[in-house]
Length: 277
Image (cartoon, rainbow, N blue to C red; front, side):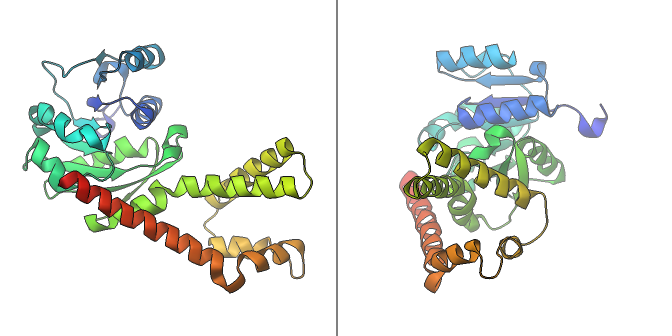
């Protein structure tokens, strides 16, 4: 392993669904190795799971001594303010990466120190299968080396995009953070409609799931615009055109999606304001 790709020494705080997904990705992509990572998890059942699945050191409390490259916070935003100060010294020696929704860079800096390099990131649920997308925003202390470190951490569970304007994180949360739920809702609706059209419910559910998954895989495999892919599958006068005529009538569907994303972004801002008050 070259110096440029040396395994990172990581302190992971929290091993819930997203924390565990990132841990799985780090080990699977050789971002780190079991002896170079320490997990802090107060829940005894989760500690047992982490040891059994990954064989990494797990502690119920903050370790007395630790030094490394990054402290990754994967705890619920409701408790993050209480958690951060205990890791101030460790973050000062490396950097802090937070995936807690709604906690901005100022709030993170209050907990770990204003001189600490901090990356705020928003991954989404497909990270649990290595197909997530994360958007990251750095504070002013993040240099090229720290950005590379964060890229490796987040890139182990999917793609990574960087922004410089933190105000965009509410829209990011609304689009990609909440976005998987929109796809699940579409799949539900397709399955239900298939049943209403006469298909056995189990078959309708399978067809809906596999169709959505296949369409997503096709979109991931090409650089074509989604509008072009839609046009490619729409034969003039055919069945798909008949269906799209209903869905696209008066632009109601697109408008509903736009309203949904706006509502989610507005709620993200509201939640952040509540947490800061």
